Amino acid sequence: MDDIRYRHEWKHEISYADLLAIRQRLRAVCEPDPHAKDGKYLIRSLYFDNLSDKALREKIDGVNLREKFRIRYYNGDPSVIHLEKKSKRAGLGTKYSANLTREEAQRIVDGDTDWMLKSGRPLVQELCCKMKYQGLRPRTIVDYTREPFIFRPGNVRVTFDYDIRTGLSSTDFLNPDCPTVPAGDAPILLEVKWDAFLPSIIRDAVQTPGRRVEAFSKYAQCRIYG
Image 1 (cartoon, helix red, strand yellow):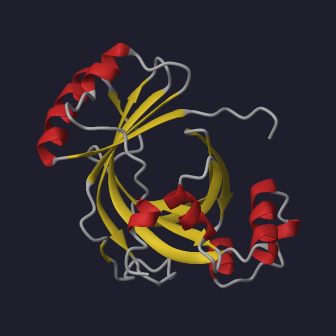
Image 2 (image 1 turned 180 degrees about the vertical axis):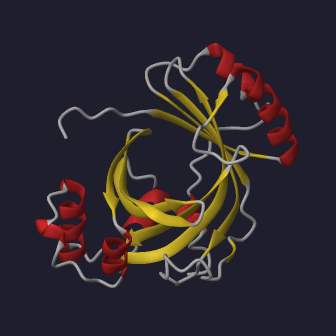
């Protein structure tokens, strides 16, 4: 945990016309994500919070140092599931990740934590402690579509996220038929992440005149109904 690499991150709410223009520019200079199918993939996440909505409140209040836990899989395939912790400090972000089996993910959803301290995975052990002592629990499902682009210099990743949907209070994370609904008037979100520098070719490609960097949270958006 000592060698923590924080990354820069921009988020912009954009229009569909913006998406079409920026997508065309990015295709000319970026490479596609090898994990995407037809240029996109579906993401399902299950976010954790405590009874006082600590993660939600810290996001809304813009707390300088904050974290949130989630479990995630892609394209409706729960054979590969990731437990992730995202941390923010002074606008910079970092992410820790650990793999889970389907059975382990279901046990966490069910509140069965006895096995987690013996898992040998520090992130699983940390989540266990915070479920026991901070009251973290599965809170809501967040579904969306992502279009990713990669630019190797600067380790840049640009994504479009849209069709954001919420599972409301459902935590039936592994059920592909779990109903979700549109998360209010959720925008199209452009995210740009990079390490030490953002190459000018990408800076120019993602220009959106009149748009400003936002502090948008898909988790917060999906909590609009409670």
